[in-house]
Structures are given as structure tokens and as C-alpha cells.
Length: 499
Image 1 (cartoon, rainbow, N blue to C red):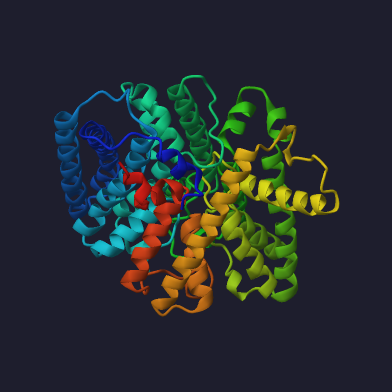
Image 2: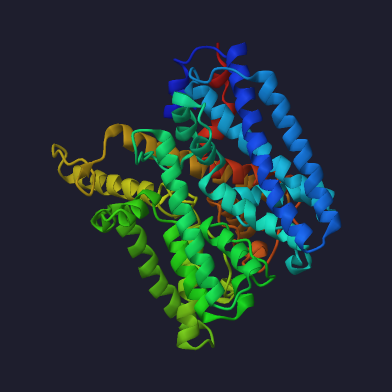
């Protein structure tokens, strides 16, 4: 794996020392301590609904997390100004794994799920995947339902970005964590100080969240369900409070509101900030956003026509279900409205392709990202052009900017590693007894943070039946996909540990 740029950089980093381990342990403890506070919200919800067993489950989990976090904080407290890039990768990957594990405990303590299923469900929630092992969602207590959806919202923007925004002692080491977590080949900084950038991102996140909640309330939802659907939409996760997902609300108004907001949530948040601060031209001129929006629009038209001509649905219903499916899958949200497995094969094929593309960089969406697909496509066309004109100098461009050689290498490395990981884990899922469509789409949807796939993991199916080894593999794929592979794969590379 020496071809990977981040791994190559690791060769020049000094060996792991006790001081480095202390910094990693201290950051993990502080993140655990901070994230434990989130458990108090579903605890209060459960108390409000009189769910005693659920209150106890969250109380026990809170005390475990808070005690472990506080103990580690005082035991390993140290200076973070010397935090290295290698330590940043370790902190981000391990903190996500740790918080997903702790977040799964309420499901177990409340008797809702087995340990493995709870780990799968919670990781699916925090990574914004939306794959579920629960058959009867509406039978869950309110506290568990809320926590299940709340994990989408917490993980959507990311623990580390929240940590940077709130924790004043991190200092210059914040950049090492920011690079390891924020999705996309480029890490936008809206302000010179990274802490200010993180706060702006969360402010935009909160504005979208409040706006969607209000609109859902106007559509007839009660406050509990409106907030839970908002968590799944803004976090582009897809967990719902209904067994039939968004289809369970039987409201065209709600369907279209959800479509608009998941499209916004998968847009680069720096562009939202530009619009909010009176610079809408930056959004309209952004080549990634234009490609992203045009791609969803064109595919929505094609799929809607396919639904209309291949089913007995009316034209209006076909458009609504077709657009909803394309935008939901294309933004990696995974909400379900219609059963696309009953549609024409071409419609299913296009939806399968959407599992890989994803939304914009710097958004809550997953998968490869539109900007990488753009760069890859432009470089492929450039290769054809240079075959005819070998001496021409025509670097690929995104808008007014030429794509650098370093960016090209990064994009090709990422896409190569992404497809290789998908192929290997698809083979692994096939060994558990899955058919081809189910195996390949389950891995694609886990890595892309989408949720539903094809075959036995379609929009109205669940993952409870999957072999335990398969659930473990998919859980790893969810985490690796959310952290864009390099952050997780690096920890398993021998060069990372080389002295």
C-alpha cells in the first residue's frame, strides 16, 4: 500500500512514544467524557414518557462513559500542541469506534438488541448509514427511538468537528484531527482559526435542523416524530420512526420537504455559509454543486419515466417516488418511499450506481463524493484527448482552477482503494451465503453510508438475518466508509507502526 499518499507521509513521522500514546489516550478520554453528555437527552425523553427500564439503561451507560472519560482525562492529561498527523488519525478512528461501542450499550441494557446487533445498529446510526436490524421499529420505546435517530445527527457533522468547536485547549493539534475526519479531498477553512470554522459548520447545521423541524411540524407531524425525521434527513442517515420509513406518513408535502432538505444536507456546508452571508454567486459558480444537482435532476427524470411506464402508478405518484428515490439514494440518506425493486431493471441499475457517487465534499453525505467522480471523469477524457494530441498541455480543470498532479494522485488512489475494498468485502459477504446482488449492494451501501441496497437488503428489508460474520464486516465497512478509508486503513498498515 505504499502508493497511498497518507501512508507515504507516515514514513517521515517520528516513532510512537509514550508521550504520543498519552496524547491519544487523553483525547479519547475527553471525547468520551464529552459525548457522554449526549446520553442525557434520550434519558430525559424516556423519563418524560415514563419508560423506567430505558431510563435505567441510559443512566447506567452515562455513568460508565462519564466515569471512564473523567478518569482518563485526569490520568492522561497532557499538552496537545505537539499532536502529530499520525496521532490524529489514531484519535479519529479510535474515537469513532469507542463512541459507537458506548452508544450501543443502551440498546443492550434496555433489552432491545443483542450486543452484536446493538453494535451494528449504533454504528449504522453514527456513520449515517441507516441499515437496520430491527423489524418492528414502531414497537421500540420512545427513548430508544430518539437515541437511534439522534446518533445520525451527532455523527452527521462529526464528533471531532464538534470537539474542535467546543474544546479550547486543543490548539494547533486541531488541524490533525480535522484532516482525518472531514470528508472530501479538500478541507475547506471558512476562517483562519479552525475552531471558528468548526463553529460556523455547526451553526449552519443547526439552522437547517431547525428549519426542517418547523416545516415538518407544519405538515402535521408531532414534535417527537418531526425531530426524529429531521435527525435522519439533516444527518443524511435515513432512520425513521415508522416501519415504512417516510412512506408511513402518507403525505406528499412531507415527501417533497424531505427531498429538498436532504439535497441541501448533501451540499458542501461552506456553500451554505456563502449564501447565508450574502454570496449566492459562489454556490451557482461551484462546479461540484452544479454537477451534483444536474446529475440528480437528470436521473430523477429518467427514473420517474421508468416508474411511470413500468408500473401502474399514476404520473404524479411516479414522479414523486422516482425523484424521492434518486435524491434519497444520491445523497446517501436512504429514506424509503417506493419499493424500487419492483421497478424496471434500468431504474434499479441507476440506483445502484448512486450508491457509489454520493453527495458533495464537506457535507454529511458519504460514498466517493461528486468532486472525485468529476476529477476522475475529466482525467479519463484528458487521456483520450492526449492519445490524439500527445504533445498538448491541457490539465483537467474544475471551474477556473486547474487540478494539480497531487490532487489527481489522491483521487485515483482513493477511488482505487474504495473499489478494491468494495470488491474484497463483497467476496467476503458472498462467503456468508448471500446472493450476488445482496452481497455487492450491502457492501456498497455500507461503505457509502446509504442503508438500503438490492436483493435481500432492499428499501423495506432489514439486516437481522445476516450472518454474524457478515454483520461484523458491514460494521467495519460503515466505519471505514464514514472516515474515507485512509484514516482506518492506515492503522492496519505496517508502515504506520514502523520505527
